Image 1 (cartoon, rainbow, N blue to C red):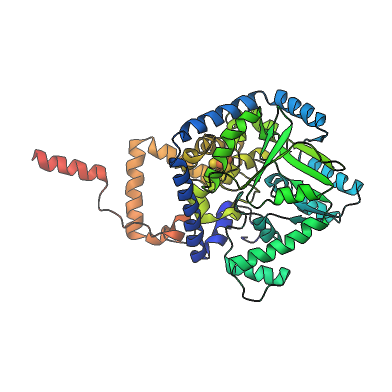
Image 2: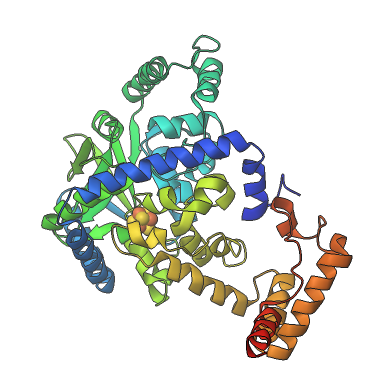
Length: 461
Ligand code: SF4
């Protein structure tokens, strides 16, 4: 079942089989989280920046259609060709059509979680078009035929020795070579050749400014610039929620984004793309793919404020110890668990339950999304819609009935203690998921209520 399962718990079991990897994954992400803390605590105005960003996004989402139209008009005036895609299929068709029209069968792509969401690489590969991911982490997972496991650190689940093996197999490095500097240099040479020989480049979009029709792409490797500047066709794929009204707002978001993501004060490259160079074509594909539906869900609308910094993943105890692939969706972690059920409630019904609801995600979110509250609300929605495990739902109903009646509660306690004392195998077995990771406690002689009553009696006597 595990090989084909699409349940977070089963996929987490696969990741958890390698305990050393789990510890190392946990520690590495916590290290990124502490870097984020140092970068944010040093900034007096951090909380007001978060507040402003949240309000700007709130305003933009409340007036999304107006800003989208303004952005489209400005972009067209800048010489950009604008396309609208209702869903992933339409987005992929548009990109494919643009490439086929120019007879292009190879394209370089900089990091774009939207194209992961739309499964663009597979779609184009099926039509004979090769996509080379140019972000180093993305290229590594592409060579490994895997999905990114983190939205900012796509190959954070891989050790350098595994990357060395991949590079030996695909890029011809020495067997056993795992020196990060040598591997990075090899990737740089390999990608440089890719940049120089591809005529089309696709980039994601971090922010799009309605006022000017420009897009901003943030990278640490400069790969978006290399791809876009050396290509004759630049396609930018953008979710419709990426808009901000004015260029003046960019300062707020750029200061928040990288500090939250990696603890850097600013991204190495914050590249502005406004108009095509002479002889170049520039296209923007504005993608909905369920975003309008999420906008209409009042309880979950705020999730569209997300600027994809990954801070909620780095801090999440469940993500850190279950790995990004256990979420079986392009965007993993707490925010992915809110976005995914919007696309398919049945397929992703398990994800909002992959949380302790500790609220650490909401505390670090730079745009103040109430992530843990939304996860809790999704649980209620999913139970109402009947998409949750029937056994679990029945057990919860039984539990509610027991806890709401003192007599039933006392009886259940007594039965539980008797079971643990005389027939412990009834609960200490493989059918009990709790038993997999922990011993059941030894039964107390009496309940707290009984102990309290006896003490009181002794005191009175
Ligand atoms: S939900 Fe917040 S913390 Fe998580 S990726 Fe989005 S912006 Fe970052």
